[in-house]
Image (cartoon, rainbow, N blue to C red; front, side):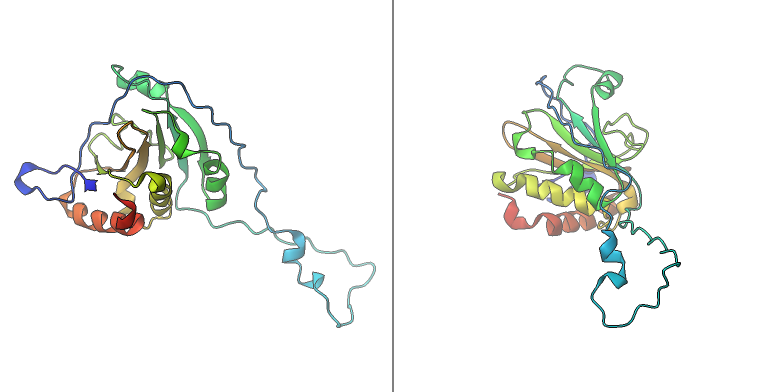
Length: 231
């Protein structure tokens, strides 16, 4: 079930945007300690870059005195911007925006899919304590409604996950967002996964409330999530 809120003059069954984050009671913090990606991680081995490393019957033209030229290092493709993974321990009930923001933990920043998986593989979404959140937002944008990039925005809310598929569905939302697969990608700031007792909830946040975005994003979300993953 995809749900959002739009102005009363034009309610639809599939889209809405709301601008009030869910609050929950305090729960113990989750310890997430991934190893930060190193500068030279995920490079192809030298043998994979050196064509002369494969067997060949051609005689070598290299002289003993010739210095071997260093082979260039191949870098993985980069996303259009950097993204930050955040953890919210859930101790946000009855606190102001500044206090809430100070309780957020920045797990890591990534710019490539390899860097993303180095962090993401250390996070078990199915075992998150109840009332905690995992978020992925553009670097420079915090997962709060008080952030200037979100203050005039809204969100698409996805409920009714197939419990066994909720982590897979949210991971698909994250990858679709960071890889700019949504047609309105520049308008989107991040995604949030909220662990809740009555069912986990995911939401896609936008910079502004625009009815022209409702139907396209709804359609694209259904393609990313696949309807069979929604109960």
